[in-house]
Length: 224
Ligand SMILES: [Zn+2]
Figure (tube, rainbow, N blue to C red):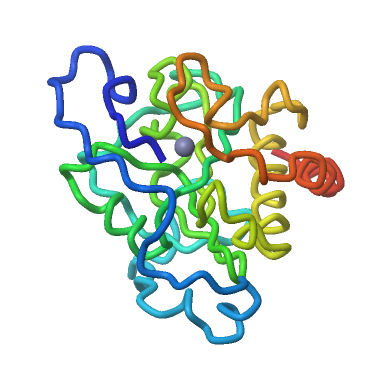
């Protein structure tokens, strides 16, 4: 996610205070292996219920859980008519899943992503409709032309990058690419750190791009 929202919103929006940059280490979750956390169900604790409106209007593959972001944290649009969708931007949250949900639902946060994938089990929540512009890349031109996918974890804690997370995310990214005719290549599936002007390092050096891209390109093609 982007905690320095200056580049996220349209340039004519009023300035908003930056959120405090959170530390990449520490936090409430004790450093355990992801498998141990999964076995303990730790990530399920405090996970918010999906909205009664079970899924957002629009694409329904793969299945996701609709937990709408605050309307103050994204821009309503009519993509891909208003803007072509050309990129998938891969993020790591630097937050737990429940804390990320709270941020996206906080109208003062001025940040959002379309999707968030849980570390332990690959649960996918959707916060912003794909036709709308989520505020995740810190770069308005990229926000308008991308789908943002957050992954629960920390850039320096590779144990969060589980097989379940990689597989669920790859299935989602492949479906997004097929919907908009985006090539399944690293030129179009990029890390937040690769967005021009980015001050963020996510997904970081432990994100296994080779493994991820193999999973993305290995997904069967789907019609748009
Ligand atoms: Zn990010």
